[in-house]
Length: 259
Length: 318
Image (tube, rainbow over all chains, first blue to last red):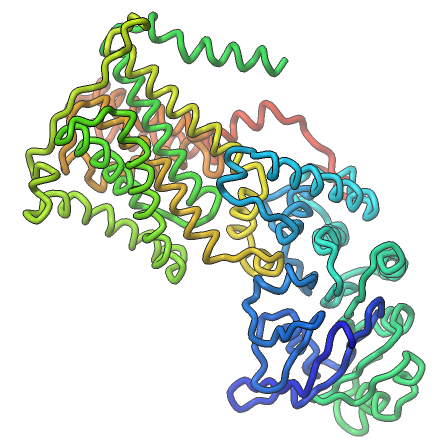
């Protein structure tokens, strides 16, 4: 069984159908790219998978659990990590604190155990601190570990989000436009980072992205959407050469989108 | 270095027991209590971002939870503390629920309404037999054990210091660990906090409960120190004073809460000493001066002196 199964998902907002019956799956240790022109329904689908929206119809199964109706905070403990399109860091906290906050779902110590610093709480804290150190090193954040995130440049903040998502050791990492706002060199770095992350962590990645060359370079599999429908699903090469995809991106009369 | 600092701090905190005469020691005891009350408010408002303008209500609940058993049932002061903690925790937790639906300014007004309502509820006929109505309740402060050889005022200062110190220690532990980070994460970005697996409803209501317990402990101490509780000692002015103390001391700062407590107690006295006819004007002037000179509170000033200027890679200046 696949790690993530999206089955016949429909999402309607009032009279508008943003996603009209999409099915696809992500296997373990697979990098799957989700592409499509603006308004294709990528972000809506992403929000359904991450538990922010409940679909009007259809189901999402993650790691054997039907997550369609689960509350938002129940997703991380199942092994779902994510980053955000426009950065959603904890602004006033330091880089290290942000990363440690990502380990929340891996811990159990509550108010009582923390206030008294019971052995269980101390052990958890030590494990989280060690993992945070490893991730800060991996993502080249050690020098800025104690600086408030809001004081850092955009590219660095993106790496903080990545570290924060990775510390809980997710089975599936959802990345919402990770290349957005990055320059050419940074995108190249990101591609290398994604490959390294997959090699050193045992996880799958679902990547929603506009940056076509990045998606084609890192993905094992690409799913293309247009107007809320799936128009292609296959290897990067198959999708790139699909006439439907070419038409969606270059247009046949209506708006053209640069690929 | 650190043990030395702690020893010095302890010595400084204990010194007034012998150095100050009775009235000033009593004042300082009240300042310690206010510092504890401000800490409670800082937990929920400073660290968790839920604005409360009604923490005087929890202070009152704590005070009565100590005064009623001491005055009517002859309980010892110490025995009332767990009762007070439970009562304040439950009330705080309960207030946390409407708080889930009311963000920001609406929550501020709702808690303010609580602060206005509590003194009137305490005067109500239905509870008069317990609360003593408008007259309030008298009680006697606990006496020092014989081996300590301290006057009642000296002993109460020590008790207040001990309870407040313990609460500060537990709070500091709580705030620097997993739960404290979650509180701040929820304040900074609730959407991301949920994606990290944080249950907003449970975190916010429990934070409210902890906050109410801490401020309630301050109320308990004040009942014993003042040896009297009455509804009109806990008007909404108290809630506003605590809020002012938090802002002046430093929002989201443990150390700032100590300064906040000192401000709450001593600045009105100072204003009174400068002008008997218009202390409010002097108080306002001092407050504005503080906010101008120390926009991040006293804690912000301390931070400015203790942290070195940091150079951030990728930026010209910090």
